[in-house]
Amino acid sequence: MKKAATSFIDAYRGLSPSAWWLSIVMLVNRMGTMVLPFMTLYMTERQGVSIGKAGLVITIFGLGTICGGFLGGKLTDKIGFYYIQLFSLISGGILFIVLGQMHDYLSICGVAFVLSLANESFRPANAAAIANYSETTNRTRSLALNRLAINLGWAVGGAVGGFVAAHSYHLLFWIDGLTNMAAALMLWLLLAPSKNKETTKKKEEHTGPVISAYKDSPFLLFVALNTIFAICFFQVFTTIPVYFKQDLFLSETEIGLVMALNGIIITVIEMVIVHQLEGRRPPLTYVIIGTVLVSAGFITLNIIPGMMMGLAIIFITLITFGEIINMPFASTYWMNRSNSKNMGQYAGLFTISWATAQIAGPSIGAQIAQHWGFSTLWWVIGIMCLATIAGYRWIKEKPVPEKEI
Image (cartoon, rainbow, N blue to C red; front, top):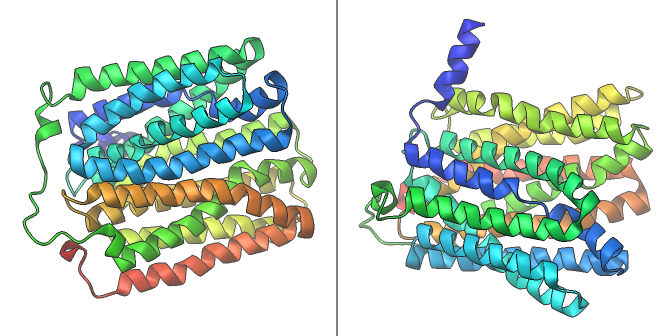
């Protein structure tokens, strides 16, 4: 027991104060994330539009995320990660409140796009900030700490958001907007260049030729593979709950408990696992292992019959461990490949891969499940995950040192 406690504490040691402050800013920001999870219900219940029109608004959010990832990445390299984060939080906060005042459908669509573009330009800048506030020896743990803040924030925001939505949908927009602004205030107080030397210090003064991320063919393949992986992973939050309900006959309460297990495992052990693995193998080795586990999770749904709740727990456990091993090291891979002058480009493209999957994943999964059934969907998803491994292995074995990029 003492050894386990020591391992847990050691996992959090050695990270810079700025990395901790940045994660706290992210926690506050994500605790207020209440609008998007309830946007479909808001549009159908309060605005009185069809489910199709409500879905289009979510798609528009996704398109704004793609544009925000590209723009945020470009501007991060030109202006700096601190200013892009600050602008994104302030403008996003204002636009969330504005969106809550809109009643015309076209106006809602327009504001939703601009809001998503402004709000999601935060991600590439935030990734660049994590790299700046960490050393190469603890970069993956800094990423994992940030992921922990995001997961905790989402958990709190989702729980509180459900209670708030039951009383007032419009209050969701005010809370989301004000927490954005609170995070911006914290960012200014704790990490402004005039108040924090770590914000202005560059960990790496790159003096060699700067190669554009858009011309880095192994990285572009990595982005495509990550998009495929993310399409598979997003089934966990879209088609999987329906499958649990219709085929495993779980109640809504049981589904909620199983899904909560994902966040609990991440909160308790992700930092410990990353601490044990960091620096022992190349990042892509762990990306491959994580992908194998995610694939195994989906395939398990077809090969272990009749366990109902037990099968759901096995699935979510495999998926969660795959997520823990894949995602922090996937971010470490592209960070190590970039440098201080082009990190925004790399961060932007990586953000776009997830945004693209967020748009395509739910539709692809739903169409396959509707026309060919869940069993076919799980085989397709499992095989898609496995197919990405060949690409990851090719990148891993390509004899171009990451530091040359």
